[in-house]
Image: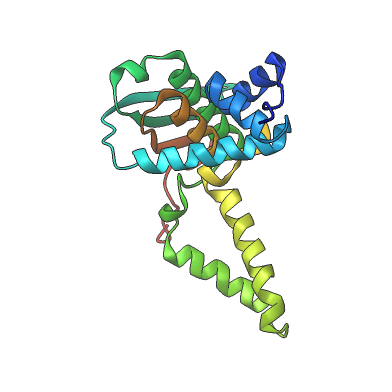
Length: 208
């Protein structure tokens, strides 16, 4: 006789939905698969969200919103986030996602949207400095140190790699995947600009 799946509470399902944006049945199934273990269920749903985002990545995103946020009259952010349809762009969930991205940029000051945006020269300079610091250490020991260093490098500079400012247990990429899972549309953070009162908007002219 087949055993029935373990019972999960409505409170567990609600909590998982709030963390992932997944549907009720998806949350229930993930919790049943993991025997009610929230962290393991989170991993399952985040992996599904990543796969769904990959599947939709080729779809055109010609709609969306330009979001804005000003903090204390000192820091201002503009961000363009695209989706597939105007219907999704007008939903509260999408608007909230755009706002959360604005808050993230204002708080954490990323320089790039994704890793691919970082220039090869900047990566090369960082690796060169790292190699100087690790000179004299055998290669076998330096490899994991180099990998850990570059992960920190990307977390500091790349928006999607940063821990989400409101919940450091997930990244901005995780938040994006949750929104894709919920809206069932491809979503792209296209570009952003961050202004700080009194900061030069242009690099200094060496001739001056």
